[in-house]
Length: 415
Image 1 (cartoon, rainbow, N blue to C red):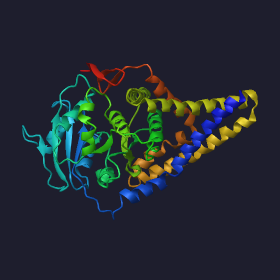
Image 2 (cartoon, one colour; image 1 turned 60 degrees about the vertical axis):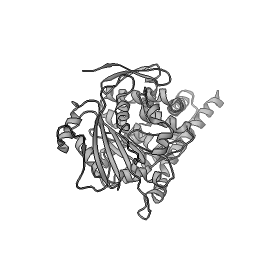
Image 3 (tube, helix red, strand yellow; image 1 turned 90 degrees about the horizontal axis):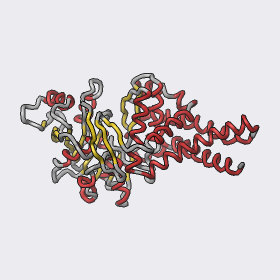
Image 4 (cartoon, rainbow, N blue to C red; image 1 turned 120 degrees about the horizontal axis):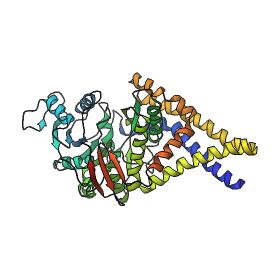
């Protein structure tokens, strides 16, 4: 029995030390990437980008700054397509009013940003056999022009610094990768424990990006070379799916292509959770992972499971059986967790150095990072388990049923 416990503890310690090492070296890896991709001395031919954003609703605190951040990008040649389910959507109504579009007009040309070619609004209509977000994106994809050399996507719950698009597609323009992505950092907008735990759980994924063998496409910020987009038949393959990013990730992996991840481009995403909202959010993420990336889904069990089994078994071995040697793996993991938490704070203070209020918001999570790793790992495992026997889920007011293989059907809509 002792050998089995030590096997578990060795795996537990190894995983924790690797996580610590990743955060410890994150800054060095990030700076190396930036010298390669984001140096001002680089001469980059900036191909034309079509940036697609599927939107739903209007958020009085986020929609306007989000829109302004997209139309004020420093990239020299791009256009935007905002796509909605309905022309009665509050976001669509706000955008038409904001852009002062005449009746019947769907496009707007800016006067103060020479890099932005135009902004186009698209109404997709309701979906019946795919995710509404994917349905909206497909409607926008039908508007691609022959000279759109890169197709990019963004979610509407993030804020993009002016160099975001430049940083995202630079590796594509340099011919280093055909597919690029980054990730979000959830920024607490209140001090509710659910919000703070959600931010920490998400941060554990955010700081894993950058290693090619681990990179996964994130739909909130991704870009793909048009030639690869066409070769992968993205428009055809997106039919009847719920998840855009995981489906694209699967297509890219199967084709043998690599996915690039820009560490210094992680974008802030303001968030507020209740406990119920947090568990619904976490379950929804793994619901889609289960159907579109089974390897990633199983790896979530491995990471959370070994941590929790190692933590609980070492404490029981010490307290119930007097096995003081179990304090070696327990002490090693606790020490590594402290180093990881310290390094993760260094990562976000550098990432958001121009936004002191963002750093102050994230500093509220420090006690969770240092003292509650086992607790948030347990919550993470509950997210994964919560998706195990589910084949239906509600997302943005729409109830979906998903079959094995990912085929999706809309079964009801709220309102």
